[in-house]
Image 1 (cartoon, helix red, strand yellow):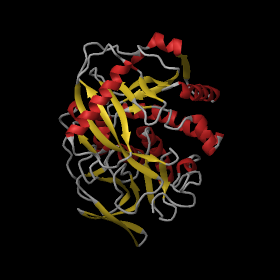
Image 2 (cartoon, rainbow, N blue to C red):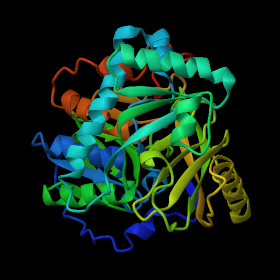
Image 3 (cartoon, one colour):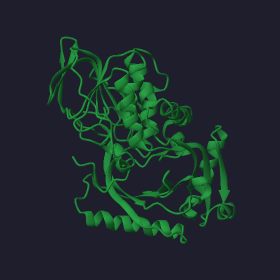
Amino acid sequence: MHIHGGSLYWPTTMPIVPKRKQPQKAEHYDAIIVGGGMSGALSALALADKGMSIAILDKRQMATGSTMANTGLLQYSNDIMLYELIEQIGEKDAVKFYQLCLEALKDLNETANRLPINPDFIYRSSIYYASDEQDAERILKEYKTLRKYGFPCDYWNREKMSKQLPFSKPGAILTYGDAEVNPYKFVNGLISLLGSKGVHLFEFTEVSDVIDANETLRINTSAGEFYSDKVLFTTGYETLPIGKRIGADINRSYVMVTEPMDHSAIWHENALIWESKRPYLYMRKTVDNRIIIGGLDEEKPEVPISDELIMKRGEQLKAQLLALFPDLSVDIDFAYCATFGESIDNLPFIGEHPTKKNHYYLLGYGGNGTVYSMLGSKIIAALMTGRHHPDAHIVRLGRSQCPGVEGKTVIA
C-alpha cells in the first residue's frame, strides 16, 4: 500500500540519516512492536523506560511511512469538539480525554528534550476559526465549554480577529499550549535514542502472522521467526499484517509547502491555524520560514499516481492560502498526497485485543495522531506491565460508544 506520493518536504530537512546497524536477533523479547513510526517509537521508549526488552519490526526503513507526510501540528483540541464529545461519551470521559491530550503535549516536549537530534519542537498557540456564520455559534459554544473545564484559551470576535490577522471570520478560539514539530527529525531522534537504550531495530522486516505457541507468541516475518510475550501493532494507516479493521475509514489528503519567504512574521505569533468546516483547511509555519498548508480531503484510500493531479491540488491549496493572505507572494516548492485514518467516533484505538491475549494496538486515527501516539504510549506501557490505567476504557478496542461498532472489536 502506497501511503504517500508527490514531493515530500521533511526528508530535505535531514538529508543524512544516521545508519542503523541491524542487531543480532534475541531468542526472546518482552514485547515486539510492529511499525517504526511515531506510535511505535514512542511506545518503545515508554516500554524501554520500564526495563522491558523490546524489538521494533518495520517492513521499510523506519520513519519513512506516514511520519514523512505528517504536517507536525500538535494540539490538545480534536477533530471532535469538546462539547460534542461530552454529548457522545459523557462529561467525565470527554473532559478527561481532552486533559490527556493537553498532558501529552507536555510529555512530547519532555521527550523532545531527550533526543540527540533537535526536532524543532516549539510551543505555539492555535487559531481555530469559524468558517462561516453557521459555525460561529458552534465555535462560541466550544470556547465556553473549554473555559468551563479550565482549558487555556481565549475568544476572538470578528473585530478582534481583524486586528490580529489580514482576514476576518465570524469568530475564533485561540488555544494555548499547542506546538509544532518536525516529525521526521523527531522520530529519527527517537530511533537513535532507542538504539542507545538497547532496543533492537529491525528494518525491512515484514510481519506475516502472529501465532500463539506454548504461552509465548511466535511472530513470523520475512527475516524469520521472532518470539515475545506480547506484540503491539503500531501500523498507522497501513494494512494490518493480520486481521482487518472496522470502525475506521482510510482517506487521503493533500499538502502544499511554499518556498522560504523573506519575512518571518506572516500572522499572529506564527500560530497554528485551522477551521471549523469539514474537511478543514490547516496551516503552520516552519523554522526555515515556509508555510505548510493542507486539506482538500477525499474519501479515497489510494494515493494518486499522477504528479499532475497532486500539483493541481497544490495550486488549489495555494489559492486558498492567498484568499486568506492576499498580500503574500508565494511559490510552491513541495506538493504531496497522503493517506490518513479517521475512526467513526473520532477517538483513537488503544489497548489490548478483547479476545486475543497479549495482542495490543495503538492506532492514532484522526487529525491529532502524534498527540494520540504520546498519550497512547503511556496507556500501553501501563497495560503491558500489568498496571491499571484509569483512562484506558475511553480508547479501548470495541468500546460501546463507537457508533456502528457496538459489541464488536475494531480488529476482526
